Image (cartoon, rainbow, N blue to C red; front, side, top):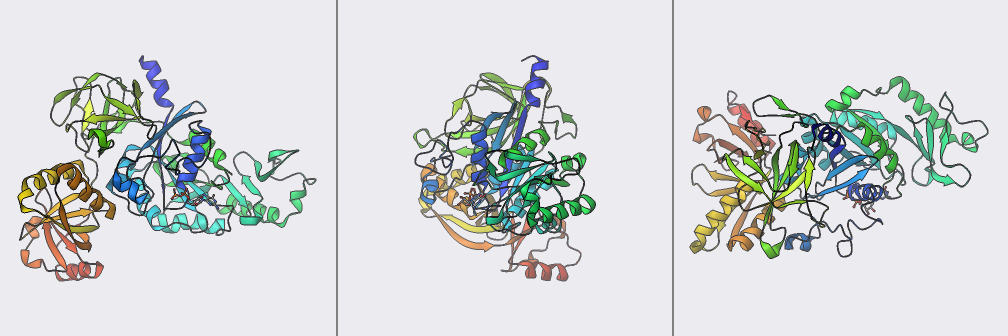
Amino acid sequence: MEQQQLTTVVQKRRTFAIISHPDAGKTTITEQMLLFGGVIRSAGTVKGKKTGNFATSDWMEIEKKRGISVTSSVMEFDYQGKHVNILDTPGHEDFSEDTYRTLMAVDAAVMVIDSAKGIEAQTKKLFQVVKKRGIPIFTFMNKLDRDGREPLDLIGELEDLLDIEGCPFNWPMGSGKNLQGLYDLRANRIELYHPREASGRFLELDAAGHLPDSEPLTQDSLYRQTLEEIELLETAGNPFDAQKVARGEQTPVFFGSALTNFGVQTFLDEFINLAPAPSAHELASGESLAATDPEFSGFVFKIQANMNPKHRDRIAFIRIASGEFQKGMDVTLQRTQKTLRLNNATEFMSDQREQVQSAVAGDIVGLYDTGNFQIGDTIYTGKKEITYPALPQFTPEIFMRVTAKNVMKQKSFHKGMQQLVQEGAVQLYRNYQTNDYILGAVGQLQFEVFKFRMQNEYNTEVVMETIGSRIARWIDPEQLDPKMSSSRSLLVKDLADQPLFLFENQFTERWFENKYPDVKLTAKL
Ligand code: GDP
């Protein structure tokens, strides 16, 4: 591709993830977006696992059994001249490190909040990961067709709980049965919940932001209340600040109802324009590389094994960070300095996996992997070495002791353990004294996947014994005295032999801090 053309197509990319608490409406809104993108023809197909095109993955038994998707898949479509990539982050309670890592591969995030519930636990956790990256975050307050909380409350909560300014782009006129519409502050119009035959969906406002007196809605007390709230927003609210949005310090807020497809298109249209195209990525050296650099480069943010049980394969998900990917191209794998030919790539339309011919910075490609890749690996073309920084590690929260059920299976047990840990499926620790294996994860599901895969791929039955949720804190080896350890503050070491304590709860951690005031404890991301 010519440089000029590369720049043009990269500028069209919009790569983002939707974060939310389970049931806030992520699937529903994703589906509406896919409808607008012309990818699906009717709603209800994303979750309809049996009939839909978008039964994201039946790859693993475990997914079938639990009816959930373990895999963060990628959906892409063209919309209003832009090429949209939505990276799915499983919205289930049991989320995993994959979910977090997926957030390392996007340029923006959309936060879907149930307007009756406000900000919930999972949203908060995911938000914090996105916030650390300093990328733009857009908010969709969903389920306006139900009675929800006061919009002013919801905006306030963004500041109180997430420490981010909310800047409303539209404002609800009523909710639940009384929902009349959205007062659109940007387009200076009212979007009606019940479009009228005569005037359609929109009522234009005058320069002062008012409806003409002849409009019956002006007699509605909801209208007057909305005007008061708008005035309040204009005097005391946060003015839109594109710089703050770009840094993730302010979030544009949109209201709507995904289920009734109200306000979703308005949101998508603004989002597509405001969300950033892929920009320069920082390298491990601290320099940065433009997305439009002619050399191809990318990093592995996820490895998924056994997507197709018939051919026990692994797929490495690559976020293209610069240049253009072409089928059959030769790249250097930075870690080993080996040359690889990328023949077998797949683009993701959920389970409609198609062969990719070419893709550019911002896109995700899946590469069939025979064991070459590790999470965080960089691949690139050209003579100049390119290295993206290691992906952050997330502090595990729950732990299990693990052993092989059959002592004769030690060899495959170790092999499986080593490979799955390398893939980043779980974190591995050893008891400092006994050397017992301890697994750590951020979600319970990771253990189940681990167990399942040990059985299926390495033919090893494992025995797992719950340690439960613990607070993991690393300690400087110089400051360590093994006597500091107890059953409530278990001392273990990580793969790099760094010591850490697994505290039973916050009290034990505080007790420890009081007892050893000079010892510095650190968490990961
Ligand atoms: P997810 O877990 O975040 O993917 O949530 P879903 O999209 O599966 O939605 C959870 C439930 O909320 C489903 O029963 C949806 O039909 C419902 N839902 C989603 N959006 C809306 C909405 O705007 N209004 C109402 N009333 N229900 C909604």
